[in-house]
Length: 274
Image (spheres, rainbow, N blue to C red):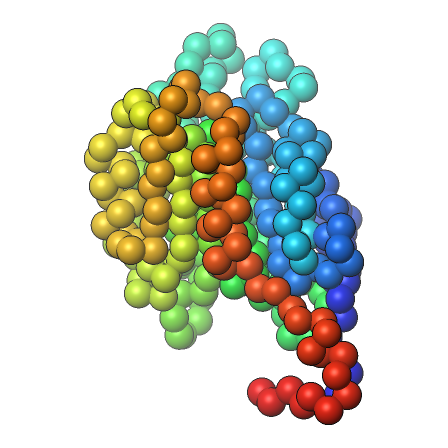
């Protein structure tokens, strides 16, 4: 029996030109998991890929996506759904433009995941099993990561349970987009097994999906599979800047990442039973 490859073939930009991304193979030589990174509003994938690399996660490749929504009069970074109109005025989350933008981004990312990230043939070294793909986003990127993990691909054709796109999602200061026009009232049983971590400051900001109603809804959707952590002393919407918050992120990933025992695999008298 041929052993599973340690490296996976990097996703190819030419296979899906509509989504721009940067990829970094695992530093330890084993691409068993994939962490997909979603930058904040106005940022870019290079900065978030650097953040991911500093985490030094074992057996985990990184892929940072560029948000597909341009920001008027701003060329350096993008977003995930419209936040400003052509006059530079802020767009409310409750607006039709925001809902349409979220739906369009969700559809685009589902197509990208299916085409480039999710393995079609187990053991081929091309793509990852959905349960070994994890999402991490900041602010607006955290919102779209949650949205994709919860609602992405629920309308896929065919019989059987609702397919999953990832094994877990982390939203840093990113809320739940729950406009009735673009989400369902409930999740299928299979999707309710998703693991989620949300970290936030101690303010309740309903304008960015972090209000009491949205967090209660998230807990009702995922029950004991969601962990909402209020970071004491954190000021507003900001990247993790404390040992406490980073520890929560590492503990969450440590509990769910799939790690291979290479020493055990190398023993000639060990036989894998499927």
